[in-house]
Image 1 (cartoon, helix red, strand yellow):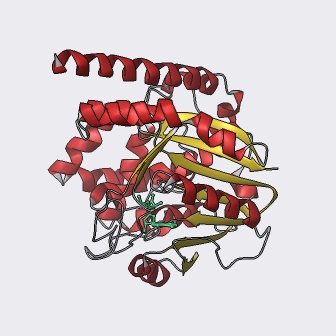
Image 2 (cartoon, rainbow, N blue to C red; image 1 turned 30 degrees about the vertical axis):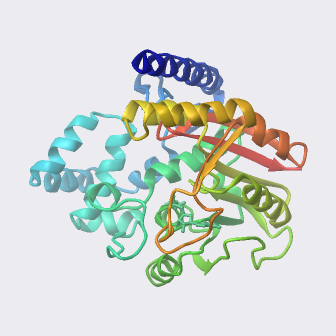
Length: 355
Ligand SMILES: C[S@@+](CC[C@H](N)C(=O)[O-])C[C@H]1O[C@@H](n2cnc3c(N)ncnc32)[C@H](O)[C@@H]1O
């Protein structure tokens, strides 16, 4: 009986997630704006979330700084490292292959990869917070930087036109590091309550400025001082009331017409966690019921030690529906893009314009 019940849950979640994905995918495929980013038809493949595997504009821009001899040198070095060579071979011509070329080139210390791209080796020590480590993460958050720039492109906005950008909740700066290499003309800053991560980023990433931020608003920045705030895996952690207060603060910080890009757990995340087995069907059911009833689910899952020492009962794990978020945001923000599951087949991505 419980088995049947779980099967039913799985079917419901899969259907809801598939519906959201289908809607997003058709919107995404219809974007004529991908063409200038160099996505040739025959190169299309689907990523984990079922999106076209992406134009990867930042990765392309950085990889284009390498000439053929540089690429051969990196490939030779990868060939001499059997584990990396296996991973590289299985990426087979997709944008992920270019990301691996850059990441492994940096990991293996190939001069051209380090000097010509502007990427920096990013290896915070184990005691410093970082979302990813090792060869795949050696060049920083290429996937996330691509996701930010591509999402703007869906609204025909060029990241290169931004003057002042904040990475809200930047940890040790993996995404800023990539954006700084690609767009040296843009003023980049990052903040996070994790003082160890901010100290490390300040020392190792001089191309951006960093500051320790409080758990609760406000930030020590003037009104209307930012063109773009992006926040990856931040609203997926705020208790709903605190999340709303921070959205108000983003409204204050952005200039009129400024942009907010954020990611949240939503219905597609339920599917992701069921499929990966990271959450039990009973919990997925509980979250799904809460989402259908209230539009939100929150639990303080970090416990007494907090999240790498960042402690706050309102910083845990949150799921939000688009309906709930937009009911609170609009009309103070307009929605420019909503991409369910676009972040790693898990979190939804929203691009909002401050009214
Ligand atoms: C899941 S990590 C994501 C880090 C980064 N955005 C990335 O993708 O690499 C969440 C980050 O949010 C930070 N954080 C915790 N409380 C926060 C708050 N109130 N405001 C902003 N960031 C916060 C954490 O310290 C952590 O670095």
